[in-house]
Amino acid sequence: MVLMESDSELTRGDEAPDFELPGADGETHSLDDFADYDALLVVFTCNHCPYAEAKVDELNYLASAYDDLAVVGINPNDAEAYPDDSFERMAERVEDGEIRFTAYLRDESQAVASEYGAVCTPDPFLFENDGGAFRLEFHSRIDDAMKPDAEPERYEMREAVEALLAGEEIPVAETPSQGCSIKWREE
Image (cartoon, rainbow, N blue to C red):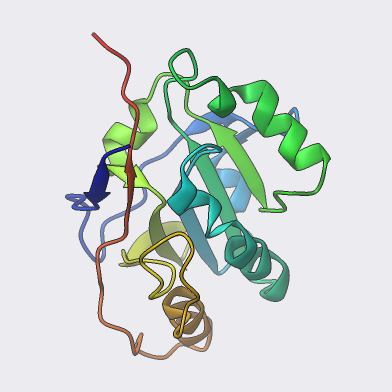
């Protein structure tokens, strides 16, 4: 495990790169599938990283608490090297109710993670629906608990979502997420 901090080149106001990926629910999902939501939280995550696992409960909470927010997890990790990150394991976790995101998608080619500039799991990007285009508003950690076994004192992404949905300025400074490095396939 290598501890990484996110440093995507996407900046505030940039449009979300499009995608079309298979979901653990058996459906294929594209960015357009979430057009009815006011906000979109794209989180590059996986099944094996303790940093990503520590945020599942909060991501499930966000997905259930805000009707106008779509929470989309995208797993880009090399499943050959990390079998727990396989599409089959993703589907099991969704079916068992462990993961209750709006969608949990598999980025087998790793092209989507590359286009977003994701570097770690979890790596969250919060977008606002701006007349049909999702524009980046906040690229930051989910909460202030920076170790997998630490309890958060501040749920920063929750505060950002609430402000965004209320049409207010986000009251939280961006702090890079940290976690395990994305497991890129060997070329």
